[in-house]
Length: 138
Image 1: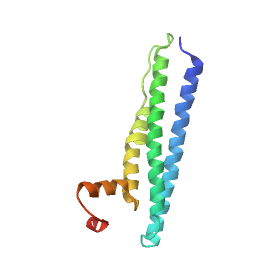
Image 2: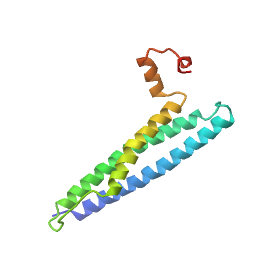
Image 3: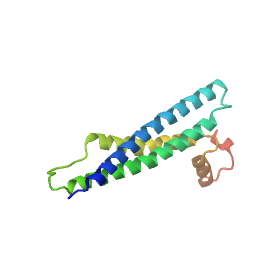
Image 4: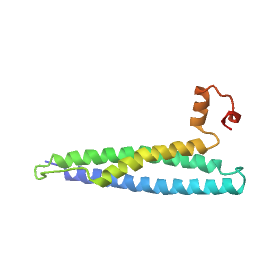
């Protein structure tokens, strides 16, 4: 038999994490927009710190989205074990969340990191290609 308190806790947890993911994406998008406006208005003198904050927010959202859909999968397996349930499946919203929350979120985080002045990915790329400084990127 299914422990309803455990199931309710897991359902609430993954739904709450999904809402937090949405909030992080919106806030990160605002930072990207503000950073882009600052860079456009100041001839690229300001705004890099906003890209760095967006990078952290987007990666945090990706990690939280993985935790959220893991809890969702676990909740569905708990529901499947119930004797009164005949059929369960993942609906379209679950797959949209996996694709956009995790995969597209990872792409957005990578792009935000690449746009930041102290980019970890750009540094790693320069190490692999044996480039010494930023002048090689221009």
